[in-house]
Image (cartoon, rainbow, N blue to C red; front, top):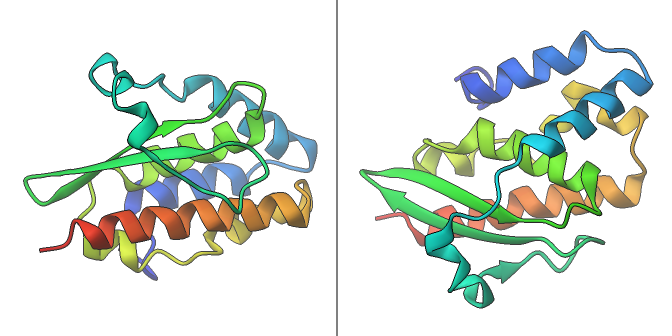
Length: 143
């Protein structure tokens, strides 16, 4: 991992780096369509998921650890496409990492993607809160 950014996440950052202005936002919206729905096995325990209260949109995340690696599952409404897109970035970039690897990802890694140029500061604060929440979930699965 370079500068505590895992390889898959670094690839996503580099993809965004090639985009200009509104292309970044359009790519984020495209990613939102790829965020999978909750697996059926988790639908019945959905009310036990933790919510990221700092986020303007209702964001619920469930974490599991198998063979020392994390898996994160998101429930984000389709009416919040930028947040769903960010959830997809985190899903692709952090799933399969150890809790220790998740813990060291910089909270503001999105600055390397230039999202701060196309998304409001309030929404960026919520996005940072999502990553911090995932770090807490991973920490609870440490050991």
